[in-house]
Image (cartoon, rainbow, N blue to C red; front, side, top):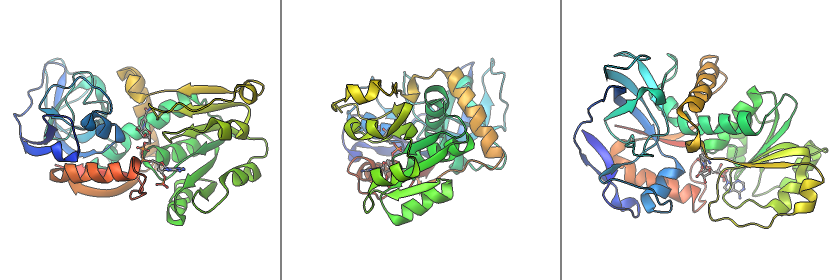
Length: 330
Ligand SMILES: NC(=O)c1ccc[n+]([C@@H]2O[C@H](COP(=O)([O-])OP(=O)(O)OC[C@H]3O[C@@H](n4cnc5c(N)ncnc54)[C@H](OP(=O)(O)O)[C@@H]3O)[C@@H](O)[C@H]2O)c1
């Protein structure tokens, strides 16, 4: 099969698009003809060595996939040949990645794709939507009437956070780096979209939520607690999910007197069972037309190296080139 893989860590140029042996499904695995995959920032960290992962080379990149089951192992119970499926959290813990024409995936990581949703949309949502669900429901405990703030509402994770927070009944404030992206945030459901390049973000938050923000979703890798804790409401919850190297100062006084809490989390730690429960909600909301993928562009899988370059410029170097996900098609 054709696959995008690496044989060493390094820049995007270490990505090879070439032939690898077809995978053979074990008893609990489904063999999937991959319809679409997408790029996540964690793919960049693994490829570059920024995260020291145990990799066995050749290592196929990619966390997410959507496609069609073509063969099932003898013990597979939940899926049959012809089912359209999606999954995330591959390419870790010894599981190969997804950037290939075929993938053999344990059924516990798979979910049915709703009939009205394309493979491109499903791949674009998978990791980011599961992340948003785990953060908002498990850690954020978002309730109707809460004010939720998210930095980067048109980004990969942010676009799912905006939509899901609205579904859960929150009033949503999102930031964006341009007027066009602020408009995308409004279309996704944000009640207030602030252009962080041209507007006073803190003043806009205070005007919208005089009692403060109940749930603060920080998607930046450099959280600024000096700034954000004063903007939290009493018993406000702050979620952090990025910034392995960040060592910001933490204003203890303003934090504890308001009885705030801070939750860090990484979606890859969630068990297959917890991810399935997030996936069930995602599928329900997709079927009801309440949740939509935010796709920036679709490229052929052969352009994986270019896709990594673009994602790196946008997420790490903050070029702002992307508004949502890069989807790749084998
Ligand atoms: N812990 C987990 O489970 C988990 C899961 C997924 C991702 N992550 C991490 O979360 C981070 C975001 O991932 P992603 O996929 O959403 O990346 P992304 O699609 O590149 O989104 C990044 C967002 O940050 C916004 N942004 C950049 N500079 C900003 C600024 N100065 N002020 C406000 N917003 C700003 C961007 O907004 P503009 O484009 O409008 O500038 C964009 O919406 C990455 O570091 C990733 O590794 C963690």
